Length: 426
Length: 77
Image (cartoon, rainbow over all chains, first blue to last red; front, side, top):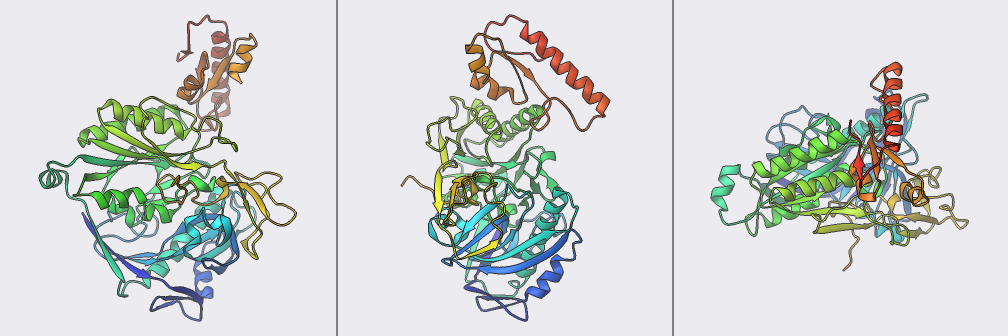
């Protein structure tokens, strides 16, 4: 399967009377988009705002971050099973509005959504301080259940992102990248001497708004399965999360998965990147056992020599991570696991809830309990009403001078477990 | 908490869903439960069925508390 990804670099976002792409400048008619969002009876109001890198702006509570894309050639459309039909995606050509993002914000659970700072120390921790952000702050109609509202805001984000993505259909990309995964047999013939490497991506599926969707299917319901990695570049996997923001994958990260990109970079040179196995992180022990058994089985069936496993979230999914690692290693396949740590504010506590000697190659996204001070910024998009309650905050979070004393946990993408963040020991 | 109470000389049964974590942490008597968000119940069942499930787990736990163990034990059935 081969996908061409054409990047249209967005240099600015402005409000105007018409939604259009003018060179690299995206003009947004907010009223048009409002109408689109308010088609959903669960959403009472939506306000659009623009946040640019370097501005003294704090966005919170952030639910999802989405990159606008459009399918230009080949079967299906972006976000299959959500926006487009359930056609298999990942081949042909896709255009990307690069350098920008649609950010959905406003309280859903209230205490679980994240913070994105566009400048200052907070900006150093979130990858979304570097994108031009079109923020949509939504509020729910009265009396609505939070899961119904989560679905409404999730879908509203996808609708706006695909509407904007459509503007890139006929634009000339600034850069075109090509990603190709051969069939199993072709790959063996092409690269007989290269180690066969797979990527096992664990998807957040604990429920209660800790959810991920694959072709529209709730990941709690999936058996581990095998994907061409290019399928994810067309939105086959999307976020339904409202959870500790630092280590959940917003939809933007699924579209731009760093592990996938880096494995493609080495594909045909030092490794044969065979493909991507997706599995879940459910709350029943039997599900954890079944999914890790099936994941290890798929790795064996594909005759992999090595596997990279990325986790999403923390806590009981640490057990899924360790089960995957142990069982894949038991098949004689080398593993590297990518996780993050909850080692306490002083960094002295046990980092993961589970452990095993088979987990002898570990990459960390950082300690989510690390405390940082985020100075007061001039403008807040959204509301600070929940800032003392969000996961990683405390009663002391909002200081007298307006600064925030928080754990990294509150910052969207700060300790991302696909390597999308900026934390590094180097 | 399980370890500290045992250290004080009282036997403890850890009712939990993710038994591998309980094993890693070092509990000696472990009784598996239904699911992480609802360890002693199951919202998919009727309230009457849930009460039966709850009673069965509590009774199994009391049984486990009175059982001599030689090292870490998961009371599966």
